[in-house]
Length: 575
Image (cartoon, rainbow, N blue to C red; front, side, top):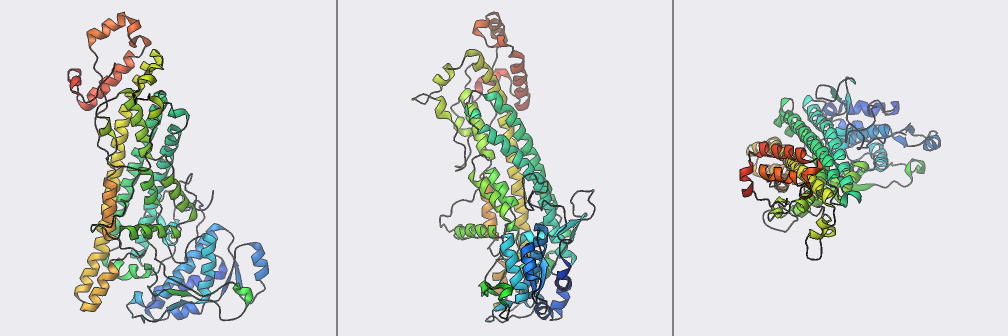
């Protein structure tokens, strides 16, 4: 299993390998680790940039061949062969690069607006090399500050806020550590959520297979629907635990501490860009292809997590298209920004999002397929009301045309099935209708929990950023206050987050189903007895009467409907 594998990894998007990334750092990076541990003290003393620039230049060797060719050079070489080693080093150089760039601004000192910051070659060159190796942009990202930035204290216990330790920080303060811990534990619960997603996805794939497209095989759909129901219940519970974990943020990370101390270090590069330096000497053995480059990159952000995009793709949540309306004029730009965030994600995570978005086996596809099958056996004038309240491009269109004649009728399909099989499938369709009702209920529960999580996210963003900025702007000059508010409107990842988070909440809400009761058949006792005396006219003689009656009783108890009221049902039955 690869380091960033998700499917089959109980940690989800957390690293699949148990080895701590902290233990993976070679001794040759000792001086770099020392500066990282003293970063805040050096910054407050005005010595951070000098200390980082004085670090020894390190040759990053990603294979034994590279090490053998570089070990006799004048620069020290370190071996970083494995994924944990490379991720640990990438994170270390990322925090040193961020520390150098924000050394003044994060400690309340003024940076010259016209001066371009240049990261020293001793950090920039190995950082860029590692960036190409891990496949992410050269800045300390979400994967570096959260996903791979922890180790477990007691391996016999599960991941929890009390049982993990954060490896690297800018400030070494509890507020910053707690901020990262919250996200690590959310991702751990997200791993359980993704396990439910993969299981439900497998069931949906089976339902979408060629065999299951024969709509008369209803009995094959019933156990799959039951399995997906259990997955949705599990998914809802996991998202609820993510929300409860998120709610603990204020315990040890206060809003003022996050805004004034932690957030400045997590910011991206200034708009004028940052130069990644190269060695001053002409030693071609260092990196004869290295050239100084200037980049403007967004900093670490929760938007770089793959968890919510994967859950959205599975649930069928999509951003509404940008129509240039006044309500959300920057939506197109925001969606483009979200796509850029994927350049900060591990490659395996990015590929998984793309797969879930493109394939036609999401949960709504499965529900639509079940709905189509029930509609074949229990046609109703109001069948359209059971469909989704919005058009979804990923919807499974079904194979209804395969069961209909040229006039759009299913009579030919019904007549082609022997009577005994027809009535068996009709009973199975009744079972499926019950499962479908539960599926939509459980799906809505997941969506409601996602909405609650997102509302909490908006609330924390307002409390921890917007409100803090407004309070600070009141005590500042008019010019400085305007600048503070402008900076607060942009998240650490570089997006204008507030209005677009609310827009995404609206998009999520649109996925809720309008649920109605499944069909409840009416069976008259006298008629039933008469049919039992004439088995050639009755499908009860095939031993299905008891099973059908059990389902009728279950439906009646669920919805409080008795047989006398069945004629008022909005479902037209053809028994």
